[in-house]
Length: 361
Ligand SMILES: NC(=O)c1ccc[n+]([C@@H]2O[C@H](COP(=O)([O-])OP(=O)(O)OC[C@H]3O[C@@H](n4cnc5c(N)ncnc54)[C@H](O)[C@@H]3O)[C@@H](O)[C@H]2O)c1
Ligand SMILES: [Zn+2]
Ligand SMILES: [Zn+2]
Image 1: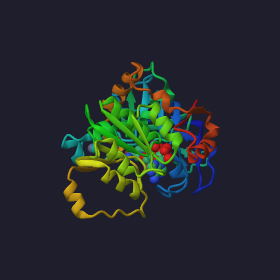
Image 2: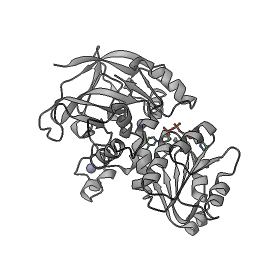
Image 3: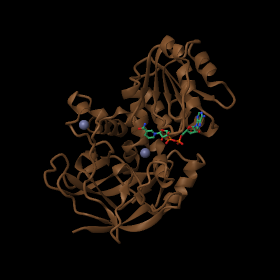
Image 4: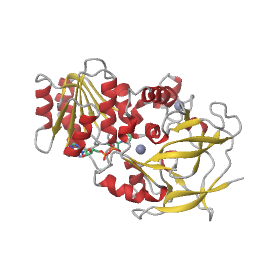
């Protein structure tokens, strides 16, 4: 029997989101129905609402979530009813050319639920990133559920479902930060701060936080940045070089998604160093660099999709570190809110007042 639940829907471009009753089908083959316990408010939800991702309105927003599996469809063996899970938006297929080459974190054919959730009049919803978790219950592909230790706080570990994993993974998976490396992180929102935490976990000797907002730099310092640079008042490249013996950092992580900050990242790294782009640019942005500098400075210029994470490998490991007190995910939860406060949370996010607002059910 399909169920009716309350959910946050973006009905049309730019319009405030509304609380609606939606219809969630019973899980079919390979699907799971998840009762949501917590879901973070991410910038990408706002991008959806503003029509910046696609025009497939109405959207069912929310995608940084944890909850309990309530029912599973035919053939589902990896998760069972009652499992505490973090949802992911890259359920790997195991069969595409990336998966077959042993690089499933690049999977080119990730899975989502096949059945559609709808409004009560039958209008099909497009779930954000194939999740849609600003809802009491949501329907996903079973592979989008990663079982983790139920002792963890849902509000904290749900954040691993997107921004925090993207940042930690940008450092440890894509940037391959290791013991003794110097790291600079440009843009210290939820993603950049997670990159700082990830670099610290990996044993970086220096972690330099760069932002244009002193409030963000203060939080970055609390989370483990060893140095901070306000790039409104100082030249980011010069400052990073000065702090690294005149050379630049071994790894520079760009977590803004703009050409000018990418350029800073490019020049703030040491020769043969690595640039990781985790910030997401918009279609009109262009980058111009002297090709001789691209060659002459060597190293690696990489992009990080979802922190090159493998949810089944990385989520349980990070939840264990959280439970051992070695990874402070609680620090990313600025406030917990009710389902009908998402619009207000967008406002606060837009003004840079929060790291994450998290809807708790
Ligand atoms: N690659 C992925 O898989 C992935 C996943 C999630 C989010 N993202 C992207 O990561 C980026 C950051 O996300 P977030 O949630 O942390 O956003 P956020 O808005 O919380 O943080 C952005 C930070 O950048 C700072 N900033 C803005 N302009 C700057 C400039 N010119 N120089 C230095 N700092 C500047 C802001 O002050 C803010 O602290 C976004 O582009 C988001 O879309 C990528
Ligand atoms: Zn695949
Ligand atoms: Zn997100």
